[in-house]
Length: 343
Ligand code: GTQ
Image (cartoon, rainbow, N blue to C red):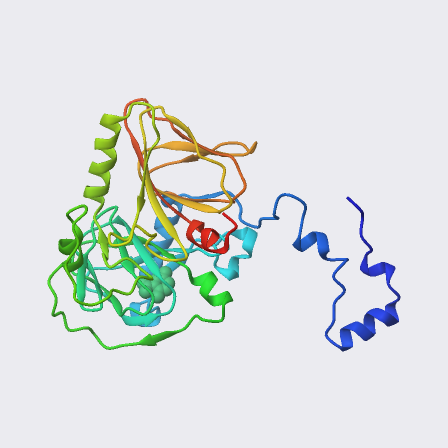
């Protein structure tokens, strides 16, 4: 590898004339943007422990009324990307949202795609383009780009969920914007899209072409996903137990930007994930364990925790319970990497 010339190698007067014309020499910056063999990564391996975070989120409920928040969210910001940039990974935004009984997070729509994973509480509903989706623990609920959505909470006690959006990507593309709406009039049945798609391999007959940039199924109930993982574990005694959330009509990822999956770790199981290009986030639905990334020391995780890890790493997950399985929902940038040909 040749060492390249630096800025300091150039006469100051030359550098000044470049700056004046908005020009930059490539060679002093070449290795920064094209490092040899392995990309530079800002994403840090991190666990946002739910037990640490929850009291602060509940306090936000006292400090900031819904009218002053629109969305009452504490963002899980990866310090490697700079806290104010609100990135968990290069393309993924994550936040924990709180709604108190009787509150509504008002109707709006925006260009970024969003998914909610329900962590705590019951009795809330997200209405997506007129379709009410009930929110139960572990459920994955989609609000795809451009769809109206509002969150109502009629239950007792707070409801808390994890938001996962492709906001950093859409923002960097200078394509992130929102419109405020008025309360939706609920004309559809509960979970219409789930009813249409809940039988595997069977989809509604349509006389028009569906848009295919996102899944038409808006709610993926955790009870179904969990049962599938448990049943798979009865058939395979060594194989990793992993599934991908897909568009039931096309088999494609839920969004073009972010891919979602779920896995089960059997009691005491250690699972080394295949090494991949994409950064990844993990949300622990059930269980206790640890994660080890490359030769860094292991980080412990517990139920309801949310973690991030950079790509181009060896990731090993361990279920530290000898008696109970662990269940994890994952999100990554694999669809985008595949599209770009860098996966
Ligand atoms: O619930 O619509 O965490 O618009 C960030 C932006 C949640 C939402 C977030 C949003 C929402």
